[in-house]
Length: 239
Image (tube, rainbow, N blue to C red; front, side, top):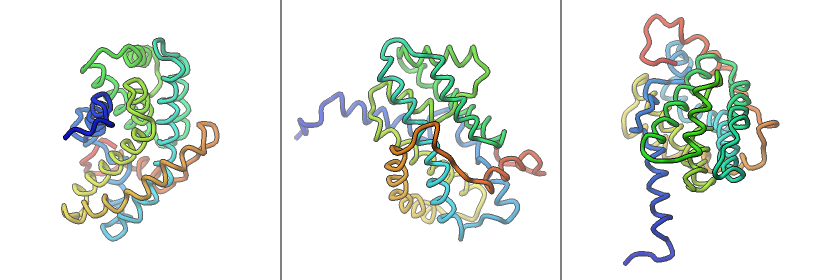
């Protein structure tokens, strides 16, 4: 029997959110390690430290991304038919300023622009099309978390669920990268991702207490790893 309290529109929104957070979405996420490859190469990260490392990553970098994901989702509430493109680009520029490593900045920007283009290709979404046109006319990076938040807001997918979905797919992407960098089996990888779910929830909850102006993230080792990445003699990843 169908649960009538869960409408067709709600079910459609859930399926769309699952689609947008799917690693199979063709945006290039499998090509980025965001500095992890450098840390593994320098023997600074192994399977024994991975769970704790990712826990801390979500608490710091994840919090930053969650705040900006929310900011973009909220932008659609004020402008349902006409996007404030200046503000949209400003949100992305704020996040760029908090990513000191060029490689991480560019990697996030590549995923964000690809994500926006992928969503615009599957339907007629005026706000997202305006955002994509604005980004193509600008030199600003369009970050993945910001594009995900804007798309979620424009499609009415729900801010809380969208932030959780973004954080979860980000963690899953890093675990996947580590499976190619480390002797990390499928069962161990699944266990790590399963055990990260509580900190994902806690981080999403904490993100409601911050704004773009006062949120910060302190990840010096990962920033160093991203900056060192172009100098590696062999590389599996773009970043």
